Image 1 (cartoon, helix red, strand yellow):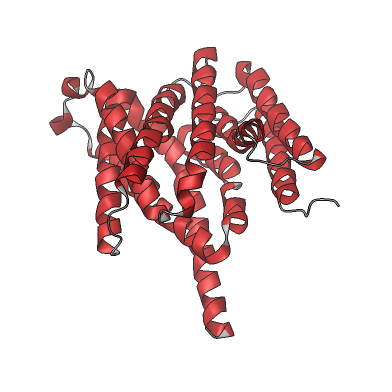
Image 2 (cartoon, rainbow, N blue to C red):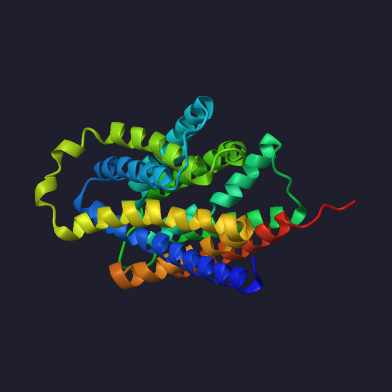
Length: 303
């Protein structure tokens, strides 16, 4: 590959990752809007199974064949946690919280995953790593303390607890799925785990799904469902996998760090959710902690 070809590939991938960050940032507000019109569990009960089918269709179109049965079963079971239980907690918490609160609490996921990895003995944490984790958790504390302020939306302690439970669920999933990512293509990891999540989401959504008048839903709500399914759970995932393949996980993860600020800005414009001072302070703590933890993770060990 020539230098010019490689440079063009990197630039295209960077553009895809910017689009990925924007898609996921906007999705918080889209979900907030959609779940005002459709019960949260019914919303997820439709979009997550659809996302699983679309991901399998894309994988098939790219020529990715079946995987070992044992790996498939493990991924489906893990998906019940990472895309099932996680999504139940997330969607119920999102419906009871402002976008800024949700995105900032979820931004603590890497810190939780690092701690869980250290407990399992799969993660080495330096003093600098612990400093980054402490800053991230301090940022979450700021967000919780600031729930009583602000305008244009409300938070509840139940909503915060549900969102934090979703962050823990995702952290557990991230740690447990990591060994499988070394032998299964990323897109198939996403498809099989999404299938597991779809099974849980459909099961818990069954009581609410029949009660929705799907035929007469406003076009804007169908647009929200399409966006949060196709854009957020298929296209953005493809961009993420391309980023990891071309630029590596560290470079790719830096684009994810943009999400809290982008999500807060879009919610301010679209939903009139004005961030509180506590949330802004929390965002700064979390972003600083993320940067410190990620750079420390790639430092050579002493000795």
